[in-house]
Amino acid sequence: MKRLVCDRCGLELADKDGIDLAIEGRGAWEAACRARGVKPRGILPCENYVRCGGEIKVVASRRQRLMKFLSRRQAN
Image 1 (cartoon, rainbow, N blue to C red):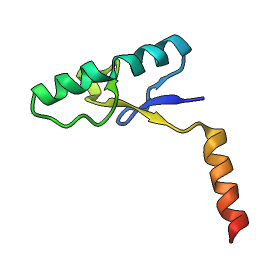
Image 2 (image 1 turned 45 degrees about the vertical axis):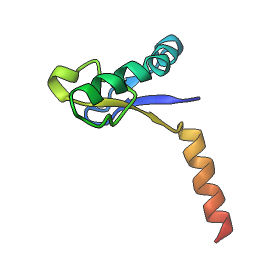
Image 3 (image 1 turned 90 degrees about the vertical axis):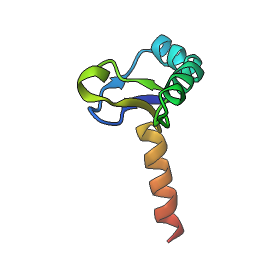
Image 4 (image 1 turned 30 degrees about the horizontal axis):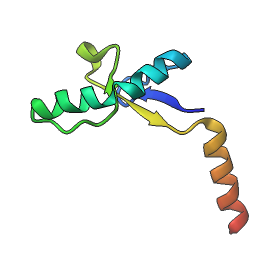
């Protein structure tokens, strides 16, 4: 499962509907950033954007990271 986490404050978007809505609105956020002359770092602004200035990024789930770590460890 995908996790969406703010790159500055660490806020995690957990509900499935919120995740789907965020992924659908990705194009609008990228267009708004480019209009301001800024390269977008994430797929949408954080709920606390005014205070933290962070953007939400897609992060691999803990299980995916664990499996990747274990496969690298077995290869060595």
